[in-house]
Image (cartoon, rainbow over all chains, first blue to last red):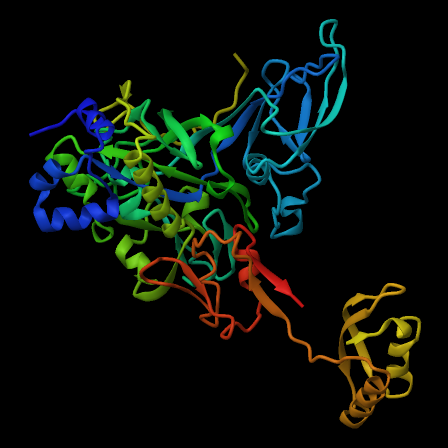
Length: 403
Length: 128
């Protein structure tokens, strides 16, 4: 027996739909089997909350009097430079951008206390942000300098547009060298001092739909406390990787590009972050509802931490030098126990992704659907799957004349 | 040490040096005219002299409090990710198995400050 998304939406409208979180689904399938679970459950909600560096917002600031063409000029939001290569008052701010005066790693390891991610957090929270813009001036846009406070409620559009979010699985980072290293996976102590991981595992959206059978372009979802959509596959989307029998990838694989109206998002789900010696970024909350169309989807959404495996990667040599290979794989159940074994050594494991927040997101999304505030959307196109031609390539450097 | 308004313009610290031969290292100072003064300082010297100095200060109505610096978690900022757990040598930061929230046991904290730069949202704060 199978269902359609339309049928599920009808049930949501009538208040008859059964919605559970990906954690609750584990027990349901264990007790009743996948076939029965597929009949009973209509939607499984997932969630993840962690640092996602390919995130940012674009704004249309509104036109000043007289007009200024920020496009092609330069501008700053709370001293953080934003991209101005669009039309007159459209700008984009990426979460890893830092102020020009930040010493970054010249004062190693840099603090990166404030960057684009922090600006986004404050902007969403409704705080005034200081905009400084410089332009060259034209006949139709004569102004050359602008300094003003801007607020999210006053700008025309504020859109969160993240080219890569919600990584399907991720590396476990360790340090084999004899000195401390500062990475995007946190501070790694020498000689396997700690192992850091970053995934919600059994609650993570793409690990509950490992072969992208229901999540596609146009899928409506929870983004930063508001409603967003899958805009495209994320950058570095890599469906062709080794997978376990349950479909989950053994290495980082699928990704999503997400978009949504920032004006209805909330700061608690978009939180600026600083990685010592690495940079600034943004913690993003994402939750995706998975329609239980058939028994197969019931099986996928019942995946457990002990059946999802992540590769242990050395970030002192292998990662920076692009040397392939890893130090073996560990399950998320092992990672969550607080220690894993690498090269025969017991290593404490630490998380960068908040599981308690991921759980909260899955609960919030469930609540929205129960209250008929959120309906499932039919994807308009699928994401590239394991049978597609999409690949994730390394750069091939070459020198020569342009064009 | 905290001292009343009327003592703000008195050279108290220099007395500690001149009369009681104590070395000092100021960690924090907040002394403004017409307000109570607060000084956080480390004092090094002979125990006898130190005791005499304390008697002198008490005689002036200066309140003395042994130095203690505390690490406090800003509950509003903490996202309960767990990045701090592997950094803490005292097991003062641990994951609560069921809720997956991070528990901060202030009693176990040795104020080594390792968690401060590790925390991505800078939720761990130093308070004097």
